[in-house]
Image 1 (spheres, each protein chain N blue to C red):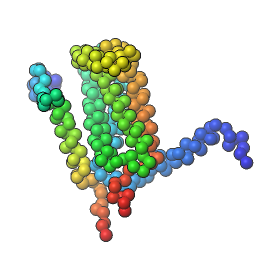
Image 2 (cartoon, chains in turn green, brown):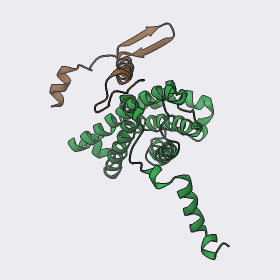
Image 3 (cartoon, each protein chain N blue to C red):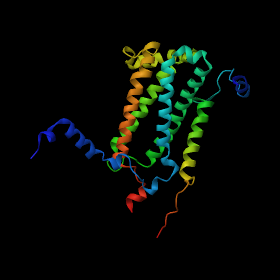
Image 4 (cartoon, each protein chain N blue to C red):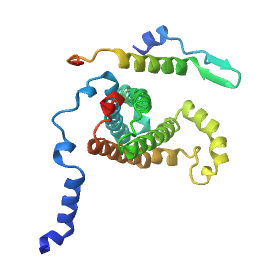
Length: 204
Length: 57
């Protein structure tokens, strides 16, 4: 017989969450032996670089464009932001290649694969809006080169690469939020289903 | 410091590009792609620290 407490939404939601992602799966003590390979490292390298990108992005957002152009510390934080992004994409592409050749969508992991692919696409858009928000000659060049291509898709109606303010808002609010949420969902999917085993482990 | 680095890598010139028919890519981007492929291949074969050899029966 269900009680009033059983029926309240907080109880039902908590039980559903624990059922979907039990604590021992969310924060596991051990991993399978096949994970002891360098090819499994690039996911966490990507995640670590993302943390650095977000932290340096916070600092840049607090101080603003004048600071990152005119101050030595601003240049330094701006460079940290750029090189974290470089490492982020470098590691993410190797992570993608590794998972592609492992066919990481096996074993009901299709949603893990799809969330990863969508995160990759979102990250490209985030990086692009970052390049056009630099407020320098490089960003002017990139935006004027990109406008015709983007306008040809029809997206120019609501996404104007020549509008610095709009691009900055997409870069520091909308797209990072989407990238972080998608990354969180991706990691939760990995935790739920576990790391994909090599082909030989499945056929044993 | 920036002057020293600037002296090591002279960027004050038009970009260098690889052209192959319709395909065009800067040497900088090409170097990054080569580095990614090399890192990927090394990651496949390099021994992972602390990994015990599997016993095969």
